[in-house]
Image (tube, rainbow, N blue to C red):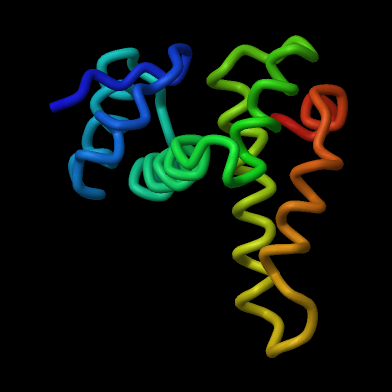
Amino acid sequence: MLQYDPHQHVNSEAWQALDESERIESVRQYHRQNRIRLANESLHATTHVMVENQVALGDTFAARAVLLRLMAEGLDRHEAIHAIGSVLSEQLFAALREEGGADPNAQYVENLNRLTAESWRKRAP
């Protein structure tokens, strides 16, 4: 199993070679080993995985560029994953509430592009 560390860039090929359950378990293991308490371990790990999956797409999706920009603005990689995950979670919940309408992917990318380290710090717990 891959040794996941959200502070280090993930090898995209190795990450994509894992199945989804292995990815989730590797994220869980990181948080357990570092004694990071989570309100919902499964949801937290799954969100990490969804963001890492998007980052692994490279330049074909906005997440990688946003991650690097947030890090350049002063967030560490783990914080940047959480910031992107918060936008992803908001978009998922919005999509569940709505029927039809605007393209949720376009809205998600727009929200990612508006995300800054400063805006994340203002709303992070």
